[in-house]
Image (cartoon, chains in turn green, orange):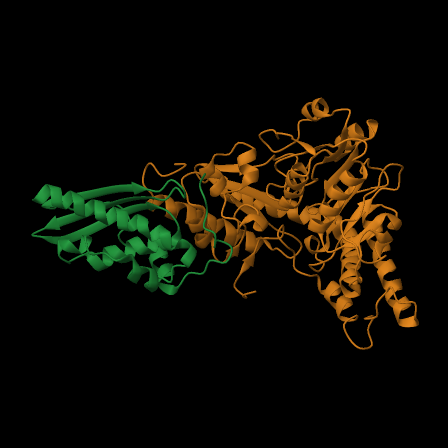
Length: 135
Length: 391
């Protein structure tokens, strides 16, 4: 059974969540070809949340990121925030993601904090693909 | 409420009518009717007179004898008193009860509790619109059936059950018939003196009265009684103990009188708004109207959209205040059990939005809702995976 967030009736969204939700710059597909393109497709059966995430890698750097998402506003914002943060960073950034920081920045309610773990799964999948492809 | 909010959640609660607020305010001062109406001194008698005047106003709205009305704290308490009280009163005759899974939680949870207490409950499966199938109801009635409870207007979809026919079936077999009419009292004409209804629950805050006050109608006929579920005083024919909240009751009575006067106009207004809203959004690809377009209360429009997530849809709707499924259910964490019971899959039930409107809603409010709904669905689909749930 799909479940909507426990906090839906009282959910509040901070300004960052609202901004990313209204204008998700990285939503969609990668626009250019890259030296290496990594793709992750993860979902969570309880809520039905579903993420498709891709990263274009050039010279060991995350050149571009994109995603598609079916999920709650906090998860949309978290994806957007991560993509914005990781672009231009060394590819190891995929491995070093820590959900605690983003949970705090987006003021994710405690009851929904587990949802950000799906984003961790997506990034871990991208990293695993990189590790196996690279090297 | 924020001045920018567009309130389209009248099925959850209505704003208090200014005349109602004023009538209540007049009770809430040292010179007002604050005395306990159970007291026999002059101040108490003044309060008691106001309580009875309000009871008469509510009875006039319902086409009922005022002596058949018991004040309660609202429809949830009325449902509990009606169902538990009637089942207890009739337990020596039989312990079979009938209801539907699409009822409000105040009803389903009460029946579930009775089930655990040794009663046998039949849960009638609704048709795909949420309506009771009369043949199925008749086939489930047994020798030991004592109570049928089916709501008048569904709080999520707005579908209207044929309470006349259901009541006739029950009356012919000496089975008590209870209906939760929280969504219809003050909005649809009711003549309880002519309808075969034994027990009816209502609450004032659904028809521009205050929260915290409701009533239970108990028909005056042989075999129709309930046993109290609370104890502690002789108020309300010993069925509902506790000091009566005079200002709340005065508010309920005033709201009932206004509802009676304004009903025809209210229905026409709600119908025009509902049609405008549906015309505005019905071309959204993959949209589905939940409920029955013909047998529906005009003040509720419930729609699902394929491929969108419910909470994000709600945020995209802002500043429109609508409900994701039932407002009473929206803290439970589950997608709408009502919509799942009528066959909607989880994804569609989860994407359901209930728009409900009323006396103070304007066409401009509806136009904002149309614009925000269309934007929100388009936006969420544009960022969704192709194989998203419900897509």
